[in-house]
Image 1 (spheres, helix red, strand yellow):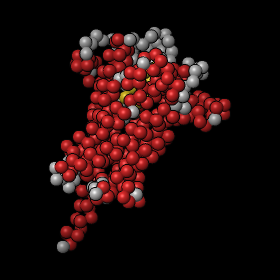
Image 2 (cartoon, helix red, strand yellow; image 1 turned 90 degrees about the vertical axis):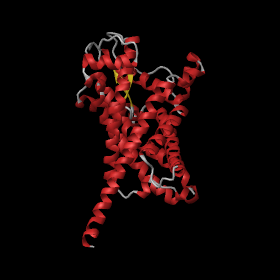
Image 3 (tube, helix red, strand yellow; image 1 turned 90 degrees about the horizontal axis):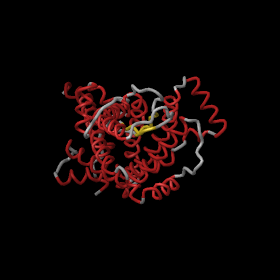
Length: 348
C-alpha cells in the first residue's frame, strides 16, 4: 500500500536545521563534482565560437550542478577564465590540459559567485519539500502516493520565487560593475517605472521548466525507491537504491522538460544581453512565442537541442545531491537516537 511506504521525511526524526545542514552539504558536494564538466564544456564552446571582442553584454550559461546561471562576458578582459587560450580535441583532452597548464583549481572557475545563490535555493527547496511531503502524506489519505507531486511543485515555486530577484541583481552587478549603492538606485528606478514584477522578469519560463521537473522528479524518486526496497527486501533504502532512484528520476524529468529548458535558456540569454546593454526587447518574449521562433528557425528538433549534454549533467547531479542529502539525514537521525537512548541505557 502506498500509505505504508517508508518516508524519509516522516520516518526520520530530525530538526529543520539538521535538514538544512544535510541539504547544504549535498549542494556543496554536487557543485564540486559537477562544475568541472560545465567548465570544460564552456571552454570547448569558447574554442569553437570565440566570444567576440569589444562587444559588451555577450552572455553564456554556466551550471554548477544545482542551478543554471547567466554569466555576462567581461568587456575587454582577455584574462577571464572562459577566454583562456587552449587547443582541445575533446572533453578528456580539455580536462587533462586545463589541469596540467592552469592548475586543478581552474576546473572550479566561476563557482563561488554562483554558489551564493545555489546553496540557499537548494536548502529552501529540499527543506520545504521534506516538511510539505510529511504534512501532505498524512492529510491525503488514500491519495498519499501523489504527495511528492504536490510537495515538489510547491517547494520549487517557493525557492525559485525567492532566488529570482537575486539572480537578476547578480547578473546586473557582474555586467555593469556597479556598486551596491548604484544597484539599489537602479532597482528602485526599475520598480518605479515597471513595478515590482520587473524583479521577477523571466520567472514564467523558469517555473514552466522547474515545477514540472520537480513534480516528476520527486514522484518518480519516491516510487522508484519504494519499488527497489520491495524488490530487494530492504526496510531502509541503501546507498545504491537512493543513487539509482535519484539518477533515473532526474533523467526522466530532464528529458520531458527539455523543450522548456531550451526556451528558458534562450530567454535568459536574450534578457541578460539586453540588460547588459540597457536595451528593451522589440519582440514578444512569451514562452510560446519564443518556442514558435525556435521551431521556425531550427525545426521541431530545435526544442530538443542539447539533449545528451543535459542528460549526462542532470542525472548524476540529481543522484549525488539526493544521496548526500539522505546520508546526511540518516546521520542526524542516528545521532538524535543515540542522544535520546544514551541516558536511558546508562540508567538501566
